[in-house]
Structures are given as structure tokens and as C-alpha cells.
Image (cartoon, rainbow, N blue to C red):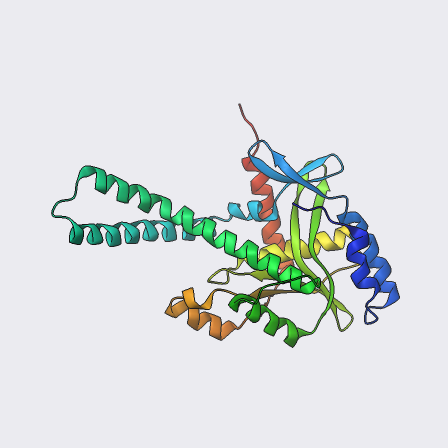
Length: 284
């Protein structure tokens, strides 16, 4: 993961006449704090580091939410059964008799299919994030359907860009906290806004938990001088891949969703954070 360069990022802010000088001073302090955040793999886990502490990823903490985990399990089971049915029917049309080896192969592929879909979606999401970041920072980018969805939302919002891909740390002490990487921090009408880019097919409640955690981290790292009152999800799915219900929901919500009840969301997030640390206690 590329390190955050405070001077390079601040150049964008410095040249922007729409951001007051007093705010620029606060932003520079925030950038200097972000520059001290590290990231690496420690054992099996990827962790953010700050001073002597190591902290879990914000998204890893949200895996403690049993509701989301249960929904993912149900989705995975449906995908396994669907893949197996489709391929067994296809095989029956092609051969007179299915062999044990063929059945074993199809079932093995069916079990691996949810992980493959997850990894493929993650790759698409990473590519689109990189593409949007390049666009916002004046670097070469590609015209894709998802990028055009983002561009439409961004041009409607018209915020002043502060930075992209900023590493964050929130910590209560050296042994309790979390890290993350904020997609977009912006300034509009005298207020700070966090934008989080999502390429998933659906919008999940966990996104509010994530962005509530990000705004608390920004506030803490800035010395309590920058507190984004608003967090928004920019939803840019591959519209062609959406089923009827997902497409209906996307058209209903649109590509920009403002998160609500962020104080309550962060209280919920802190419960998950405590559960994460409790789960990782060693008892033998």
C-alpha cells in the first residue's frame, strides 16, 4: 500500500482558493498525522500501525456483525447450489452417464465459486477506485460505465477535493483502536464531507458504520479541529449485472446516499470493535 505524502497531497489544497486559509492550516495538521500511519502484514492479519501500536482494519472489525455474516453465508449457499445445478444439467446433456470424477469436479468448482465471485468483485472495485482516484488527482484514467456514474454524481455535488486515499487511525490507547483508508475527503459550503465509493450490487447498513468510524478518526487525528458532519456513499455498481430487485433499489436510491444517525452508528461500531478484541484474546 502506497504511503501517504502530506506535502504532495497538500499541494491540491494549497492551490484551491475556495478553501479558507484557516481551514488549510487544519488540513495540513491532519495530513501530517496521516503521514505517520503505516500498514503491513503481521502474522495472518493486515494491520495499520501508529507509533508503537498495531490496529485492525476498519472493515475487519465489521466482520463481527453477525447479521452481515449470516446474509453472506446464505448468499454463498445459494451460489453453490445454483452453480452445481446449472453445470450438472449441462453435463447431463453432453454425456450419457456422469462419472464420479465429473460429479466431484463440478461440486468442487461449485464450492469455490462464491470465493471466486468475491475476489473478482474485489478486483473490479479496486480498479474503479484507482480509476476515480486518478481522475480526481489529474492523472490518466479510463472511461468506464462505472466511472461515468461517479463523474455524474461528482459533477452534481461539486465539492472541493481535499484528498483521496488517506490512511486513518482511531485509538483509545496503544492496545485498542482501528485503522482505515478514507476514499475521499472534501469541503463544501463551509463543511467537511466524507465520500465512500462502493461498487457492490447492493447498499448495506455496514457502510454507515464504516463511514461513522472514519469521521471519528478524522476528528481525532486533526486534534478535534476537523469533524465531518456528513458522510455519503457514492454507489457505482455494474448496472448490467444487477438483478431486477437490485436495479429497482438502485434507481430508487440513486448513486448518492447520505448516511443517517452517525452518532448511533459509531456506538454500534464500538461494540463490534470491543467484540473484535475480545475474540482475539488468547486463553491458552
